[in-house]
Image (cartoon, rainbow, N blue to C red; front, top):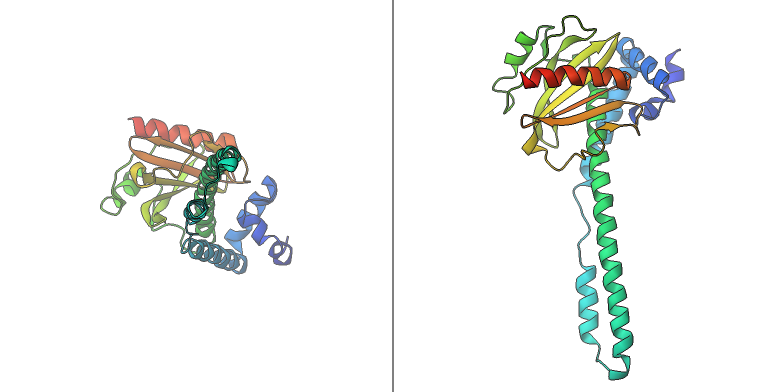
Length: 253
């Protein structure tokens, strides 16, 4: 498939909405096509700029104050008190319901935002000419490289007798929080492993949804030893889980 075919699918790929096989083929195409890789990278940067701009302004919570002022300005009449009590109770119920719905919506939006950010970081890395800052398949070389660059330490698994290989790592940032970004490979598929200090990203994750199935990218996240781990890639859910188990065992040792 040529570039003309993929040009119409860049945004769909970046949103993780292609079929699993197309995701795999497009990821492989990015490794061999500088034009598409550059286009994908520029689109990711544009998305992140728009997301950052969207955080600059938030609506002011003046509705409740205006309602209270409006109520206080109106004279009470005994003949209207019963109806007013009902109206006030109804308004209170609506406000409580609205707050609950808004809170749930914000939780979901925040969770989706984090997954979208990590997906963008993963895609941007695939499209980059220099995917990693420390290039090594040896965990004993990669792990010490992060010392002093991130505010935590971590263990990496021994990949002998497994199909995974370590390509290297780089420093990454999630909402200005620094972390480690490791790149693993399985059957020519690149998989990103992100590690952050748990307390620095607390509240961004929902443990009820450790594996995200809404995206074509498979993703898994968990907290262990004060660190937050997240794996993302277009490998199968089973492969993602296998890598997660290797990391969990290494973190426990």
